[in-house]
Amino acid sequence: MVTPSRITLARRRRGLTLAELSRTTGLSLQSLSNYETGRTAPRSTTVRRLAEALGFPEGFFSGREIDELPAEGISWRARTKTPPRTLDAARAAGTLAARLYDWIDEQFRLPEPDLPSLTKPDAETAAEMVRSRWGLGNAAAPNMVHLLEAHGVRVFSLPADSLEVDPFAVWRGTIPFVFLNTMKSVERGRFDAAHELGHLVMHGSDDRHCSGPDAERQANSFASAFLMPAASVLGHMPAGARVDQVLEAKSIWKVSAMALTYRLHDLNLLTDWQYRSVCAELSSRGYRTGEPNGLKQRETSQVLTKVFRALRTKGIRPADVAAELDITVEEMNSMLFGLTLTTVESGGSTTKTEERQRPALRLVTS
Image (cartoon, rainbow, N blue to C red; front, side, top):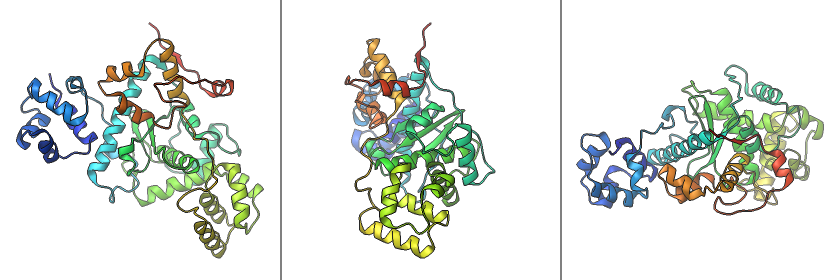
């Protein structure tokens, strides 16, 4: 029995309109519309044509309804500037990643969500409150992916075909998700993770206004304050810092030179003129579009890495997991790209330090 919504989900995942799918498959536009609305059911031969065109196993189309990510709860950064089909494709990819999480959650005991809901405090105060709750004090934030996962956030990567979409966060019921662009610099990735944390904390699961200019400014301010606590920056940085001082100090908080410059201005350690001057020089050195001589070690997932290593010891291969979800291994890997210490098909060693950093993660047994 074909599930109509799965045809729609697969089509949106590939970024196709009904008309484009019609041209690709040779099926009429009316027939495809009928299949997606459930007015008629496709024959087995038609399902095969759809599967081939959309890159999904035939079994995918006959599973139960999938709990999609809520369309209105996603923290899109440039919603009005990004084509709807691109947003739909990213949301569909996120929905499939959330389904992978559901499967993992059935096999393992994952950390419970531990995020406060702070809709009233300003961003600076909200960041301080989260830091206090998580016992960070004024120290530099550790690995941001590890930190989010340790507090119950499910972190996945955006697939390569959705990199036009900025990272985003969303609550699905009581579970928070963050989707990161793992092709950015390490420093930018840390800021993105903190930015999305700000959305989750300040624009909670019931807030319908989690995107837009005001929400983005709030999330940026939260990320800046979370990664660079005021007391720490004031204790390390002089007023009127020069470019070489900014470049030397940015490693303290593992942030980009531009982010630190903005924070210095925000804390009145740089005047407006000094801020513009430092930004101009950094831009001339390539720091506006990249992070020359930046951090090299990408922050990876402790949960996903440990999950697939534990499964491997049980004789469960990534291909087996993908088959359970009725998706291809390539589709599943796109959710994990850059977040695991090794590709999910390979082995690799684990250091004692890495093992100590991981949260408790136990296989559920009956």
